[in-house]
Length: 513
Image (cartoon, rainbow, N blue to C red; front, side, top):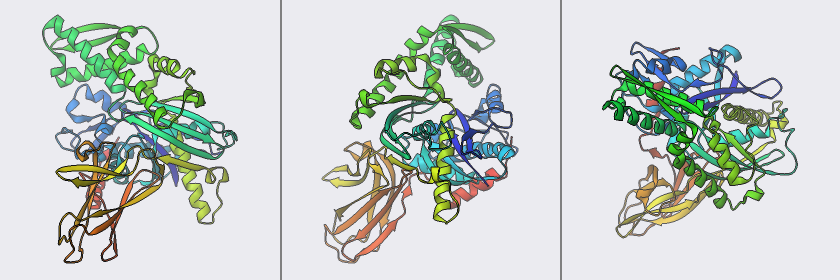
């Protein structure tokens, strides 16, 4: 059985594996393309079309096509019907994953295990939802790995065999990852067979799509002023305008002049756009990435003099303004030695290889030492805490602060709010805010069957743990009775095992092309 690494992107997906020599290699899809658009067309007749054909069909039937699914992962629904039916983002993502695996199996043989990448700034609910999408697709998800970490791992192993290019002198690499829908900056220390994340910052609602939207808004306004009608009010006109805006953005990455086609209500207009115009329309978006880059250096207490390399990752870094901004900010020429759209999947494949090598060694089977000996250390992107009451306020009592080395665990003693409590709710939060309402609710668990007659203020010890893949678990100890309970987190809007099985049956029954 082959093991693959999957970059499940907002706009494009890539699959990679390790070849017989331990080199990460991308796997083309059935059409011979490395990139598969993250688009799903649902016919309503038990069929689904994934990839470029789905994008093409969006021009004619936008209500039957789902795109930008990753921005909704972790939410209870996609936000609108697709093909007349409401879907969960996990299910739509699973359809894409199933297509990616089907295509990969044509080259590799059966595939049932994978490492899937996520933005470093994804919270627990989004990570768990991504893992569930893999299960719905019929995959055994070996692990979830952060996209910038995967990119840095691929950079480290670019001169295969794996690990042999790593020098004894550690290097500090800043990974600037601007994808189609998300943005991350990660600071990583690379040494010989040691890979350590120092700090993470990011924005899960910032990506190349936001640059596209600025062009759409500009072109639509020019059209409205000329003709008195708004092309964005019609779904089909909007879909065509969005596609034209993205093409113009790509063109402006190569030359200084492009145009955007706006067609609506029998009228057609070409809106000229220069690179200077484009950069003026989107300058504040780039500034947001600049501030985030500076923030990760500050939180990691690192200066630019200590940064060895600035690595650019993600298709949106093709925009020249990104390179110029990073060069001016860091004083270093950004590195794009690896294919920016493929490097994350390759890193995921390496991580899968490391995982498999360790498992083989643990089972007493022959293992690739170059992979099995690699030490990977990550950090949590968000502080982890528990909601507590203080008078009329509900506060975030942090247990594990942001950028703590993973895996990590911490415990604290809390006290019951009133006498004779028979159960205690533990509400787990992620975020940096003091007020609970300003944080991301991970979920909650209950400590039940407390002894009768407990006084107000009876002690309960809560222990929160974060795994190396940033997934969370909770344990609690009733200190009066001494009973320990491993509390399963009930994630808000998350899928149960029964839900996953039902969605998996639906996806398995689809004819996916």
